Length: 410
Image (cartoon, rainbow, N blue to C red):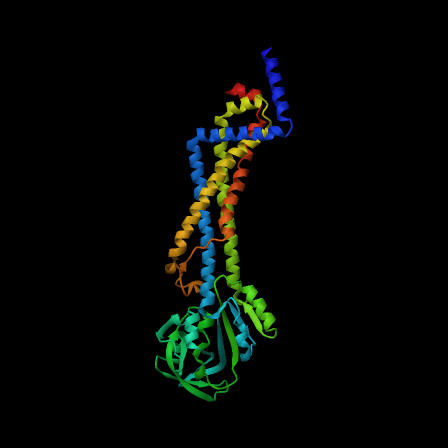
């Protein structure tokens, strides 16, 4: 008789579980309460899991921001040294004023002339660029690469040459160098004001500078380097320039620095792989721990199944447990990562000792972590996603168990 009553009670419970939707909220509230009590009863293991997820999310939020800051530093160093974010050729001098549009910080006009530098019997073929020294020093960091002498000043009849050129022509500061055209006819003489070395081959080879008024007379080509204000989208400015000056050639740094663009893309891919691997490992730990939870509370699960708890409710119970823990930990970890980024974004991280020979950090080796929406939200969302995946193993284990077998085994 008692066994028949047990079966009747089981059928009633099943009927209630299959009842109208009005019971669904009550059932979820009950499962939520059971899940919370289970986590609280096993608080030591819950704390360990919380610490694991919090530390992983916080670390990856910071690393994501650091990756963005590293990309910013490489772009800032590469474009701020000399080229600017946008380069233009085929622009007439009368049209240069049209380049100063909202979002543009500085437009540098440069004239260039192919010449021969001579000292005694030695000759060196290079491109001599006539620049405005004051504007160049305000917008670029090229002058900071001076290894001897000084950067030319406005009004001086001087030249700024690379260290390699100085060695080949055996020139020192104060020496006079002859300027000749490509046919070998003398043009004028300039004194060596300074010697530079950037460590970047295409800038250190075949390039020299002088004030615009010191440039020899002749047919010169005009080019511009455009420096943008912070957070100004490059492509938007390029599009506007191409509409304003359809005959000019205008390109963004992504076009004339494809190696840097690929490096940044590779950095993003590597960061995505790191996030995936970290949370895949974390999810295995969560899954194993909750399987232990399940084994520890196996008797309770057996009783609930005997009372009519459906497989879907069992799955919902485990999902609620892991969801509660993962969402709470992800929120705390995101906050911790945000605060860490806020601290280091002000002070910066100096890696100059490791980038002394790196062309992408030729100006400064200081990184400033920067949070973007993607960098802030990706780690916690991936943590929650993998946390939900961690419910699969313990859920399958408990669903496949027969209530009678569970109660006989405990």
